[in-house]
Length: 200
Ligand SMILES: Cc1cc2nc3c(=O)[nH]c(=O)nc-3n(C[C@H](O)[C@H](O)[C@H](O)COP(=O)(O)O)c2cc1C
Image (cartoon, rainbow, N blue to C red; front, side):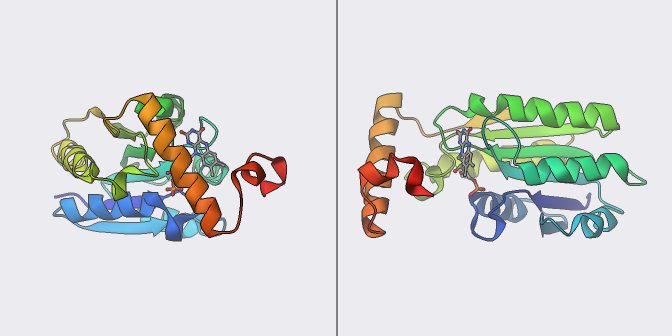
């Protein structure tokens, strides 16, 4: 059974959805998994840990239809400092919007990186409604897909899987709006304030 390494490339790694997805992956896999949050300063440390790893799983959110910039920096570092042995790269990506296909461009960026840098490419799990689904009644859908994702990597039977909440777009937009309006209220911010550029 191979040794896996999960890199959580969410810029908010300690409090991220990616961390929760990574934990679910680790719980499903019976072999050894090293969980590593990506930071601005730990690139060399992560590279050193790749020694003896069979599978490298990047777990991260979609940012502006692409990769978070912190992950781009790490990929650039890997281009300049390739590991002696290249593990198979798999990707688990989650986005805020309902449609998992929103993640396609980011997955293509990861594939291109792997092709250009001679990493074998493994499986993909694209999650839509990634901010909401884990605390919804549809959490079981994620659990099932993560089990299949883990099995596909372990058995080297690579595939692309997708999962999201089974809601219409209208229902999703209404539920998301009431969630964020309530969230703002709890923090003393109105909907009108959230609609301005001063929100930051
Ligand atoms: C700066 C920024 C850009 C984002 N861009 C997108 C996007 O283009 N499409 C999308 O569906 N979600 C987008 N999101 C939402 C995140 O992908 C979503 O909240 C995700 O669950 C965050 O995962 P994390 O907690 O692991 O970081 C964005 C979030 C942030 C903060």
